Length: 156
Image 1: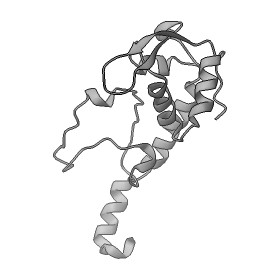
Image 2: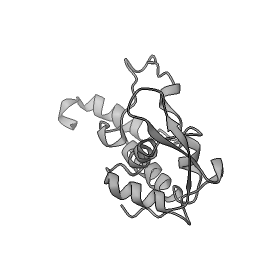
Image 3: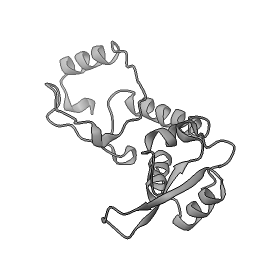
């Protein structure tokens, strides 16, 4: 990449690369409720899956990797899943959230069997929105304070 720039450009790039401090905040949000807007520095803004992102500048790939590792460590001990889902959700909703956090697909029958045998969920009715075949709706037994630590281990 150094051959793409002049010596002066390379000196400027080196100067900039040694004079920045990056701070990362890990926030879990409902991306459907946040409207991303371009800034004066970016022509566009969009949500991307972590595994589909482009290469990031400086050490930002490493920062993102550390953030994902922290999230994975906290998942069993913190009420992450229960706070990111609506109060009533379907098993596919829960599975999609877990897959997004783990950044890998989970076998549907195994997920269903494990989560239903975990005693974490309470069936509260059926989704009759008409979007699809009625699906069972669940809520976490202990509400928004539910962690996945004791009752359910991710062995996927």
